[in-house]
Length: 97
Image (cartoon, rainbow, N blue to C red; front, side, top):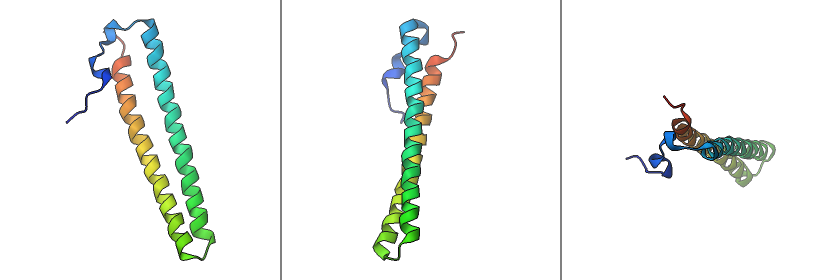
């Protein structure tokens, strides 16, 4: 079942210039958020790889693997959220017929 959002009730033909500018800013913010997810996930994966690769202690190895796994999970969540929001913005920002 599709979740209802505030965007579902917006008619693109009723938007004024201020609304178009707000949508553009929101779309850019969505892209910045994706880049933040990517940056964070790469840092987590890198730190996890360093912890797993440079130590001999089993608990540190497990922690490093877990940190790298959480980094991959964070990347997946960020990409999914970006694609969902981007689809909504594209629907709203399509040119009028």
